[in-house]
Image 1 (cartoon, rainbow over the protein chains, first blue to last red):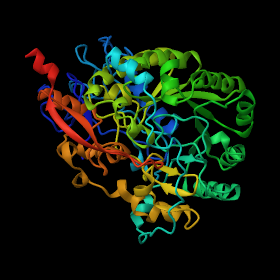
Image 2 (image 1 turned 90 degrees about the vertical axis):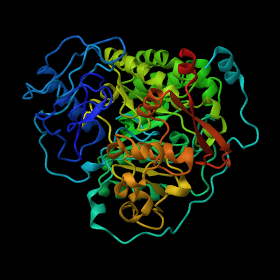
Image 3 (image 1 turned 120 degrees about the vertical axis):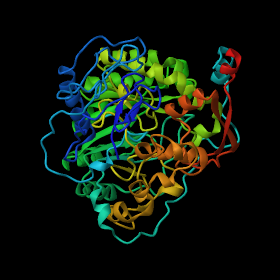
Image 4 (image 1 turned 30 degrees about the vertical axis):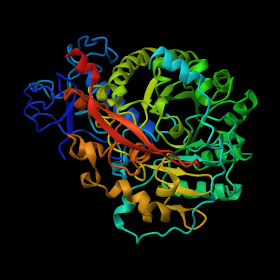
Amino acid sequence: MKHLLPCPECSRHVRVTETACPFCALPLDFSGAPEPVLPRARLSRAATFAFGATLASASALAACGGDADDGKGGAGAGGAETAGNAGVPNAAGTANPGASGSNAVPVYGAPAAAGTPGTGSGGQSSGGPIYGAAP
Amino acid sequence: MSADERAEQMLKPRPRQLPIAPHAPPARRKLPLAAARESDRAFQPIYAVWEITLKCDLACRHCGSRAGHERSDELTTAECLDLIRQMAELGVRETTLIGGEAYLRDDWLEIVRELKRYGMSPTMTTGGRGMTAERAQQAKAAGMDSVSVSIDGTEATHDRLRGVAGSHRAALAAMRNLRGAGVRVSTNTQINRLSMPELPQILEQLAAHGAHSWQIQLTVPMGRAADEPDVLLRPYDLLELFPLLAQLKARADALGVRIWPGNNVGYFGPYERVLRGMMPRGHGASCGAGRATLGIEADGAIKGCPSLPTEAWTGGNVRDNSLREIWERSTPLRYTRDRTVADLWGFCRSCYYAEECLAGCTWTGHVFFGRPGNNPYCHHRALEMQAKGKRERLVQTSMASGAPFDYAHFELVVEDDPEQEARR
């Protein structure tokens, strides 16, 4: 499966193999985009979140910056382009001032977290059970 | 929802044809297990949600388990303690106690202490009605790491949805009591047509009460929620909801509150990276029931997720088999490990995100249509419909039976979007 990155124009996630966004038709070139770095050990939910946040922060520090808040969403954190990905337009999901959902926090390309290979990493889901609680 | 419609809904009495709190049937026992497979050993539950009693001191009108009375065959203290040992051996890192109302079980603090002793992080979700200062201090002393208090609106809306006057004030008092005792607090909110307009006020209130996180989830038609379908969001309401959530994410960041979307808040619309950018892939994945999460009912029934309907999704009972045997060898818990795009149907089958999403929340699809694999609560889907000048509406075709974890049946209607029609 090819991983997904947000389109810099419309913010919809698209496969890195796309040459044009299937939603807004923007020409794309993700050929230089690195594979996402995933935790190699089994992490608790809080640790998973912290892992992602750490990578996002690392990416943000390397970002081109700029106020991308269009008033619709995001924290106004500006865009973020993964270090080492120069020359690939917005490959890591740079927030576009005209795009909705501007809190770009890509988590690709940052160093892997220390940890031993574990099991069950495929079990990470997109959130918690509905009647659970935030960690 | 118009002001008149809202006023009508706010005053609408409960449906009278069903008991508010029915007694749960006895646990299904001695369910068959399949032969062991090596592949199942790759999956371990990281997170468990454990209904330790079905007894409850609220009467929430959206309660999926129709909680109120304790089950007739709830686990004994000794059985609970042994289950904790098995959970630890299986690799569970964190356990959230729920009910009913977890603190109504006499040995709830003993359970918290044992979870802590085995190195698991004990947390809890509560309506908060009886979370006194004394209980909060006891929870802290037992090792409770964090408690999520349910807040579903401003006072009038919350009390209407929770079914008890004064429950909103009690919930806020619970947050104060917990913080006073040194327990970290978070908040969880059901999103439906009554609570959605009040989400901004809820955020301000929970931040003022020191919540570190805000878990949000969409109300879906299971249990009592199935009795009042007019309160549920319509699929096209997500077109309004997600821009609002993105705005709230910015505000929450400023307030220092982490928004934690439940698994049925999705999927893959333009705000995905706003809401789930902190996930390792930068976006959500699919349902983790039976892969990373574990649901336990008070009578020892084991499911992949606590929300899933008991009848169809119970893999076994810890009174009959070990937790590991049920986790690795029951067909219901294997569901998300084995399914593929071929198991999807309807819109989700041919969706651009089918491989990654796999129809999102298994529970949501099941309680709408009686089987998973097609999920009408999806922002991407609503956007695709909108692009074609269409929208989807859910029409209830049969009532729920009135038992805990029951659900109604709905049919999907695709219709021209009248707003776009009017603009033309």
